[in-house]
Length: 224
Image (cartoon, rainbow, N blue to C red):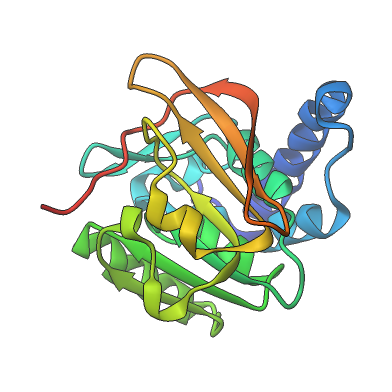
C-alpha cells in the first residue's frame, strides 16, 4: 500500500471537522450553539497527524483518543474541539493550557488567541511539543515543564484556561490566575466518573460551574 500523502491527510481532516460539526449540531440544544466558524477553520488547518506518534498518523483523524506515550492520550477530536469551543478564545486573549501533550491543542489555540502559555509535567512531551510547534512556524505558544495545577503565576492573569486532564476539584491557583470575566474548561471528578465543566468567573470574582458532558480523562499529575 502507498504511504498517505498530505492530500490524503487534508481530506481526512476535512471529514473530521464535518463529523465534529455534526456532533456539535446534535448537542446544540444543550450547548446553545453550533461549532464556531473560526474554530472549524483552525481545525481544518492544523495537521493533527503530526501531533501523534508517527506509527499512528493514519489514525489521527478518527474520532477516538490515541495513545501518545507515558500512559497518556491525545483526546478524541470531538471532545478536544468542544473544550476549545466552550473556552471561546478571542484574538487578543492570553490563554493558559495545562497539559501540553504533544502540542496539538496548543497549535489550534494559537490560531484563535493572542498568546498561549502551556505547562507540561512530562519533560519529553514538552520538548516534543516545542519541536512540532516550531516546525510549523507557530511562534505565539510558549511551553514550559512544570506542575500545571499551580498555573503559571509569572504570566497570570489569564483570559482563558484550558485543562486537559481531570482533577477532583478546580485547582485554587488556577481560579486565582483567571481574570474576572474569564472562563476555564476542565474535566472534574475521580477516575471513574468525570464531567467536562465550564468554570466562569464574574466581574466580582465569583465562580460558577456548569457541567457539560460526561467524559473520561487521565488524572492531572501534580509535582511533589
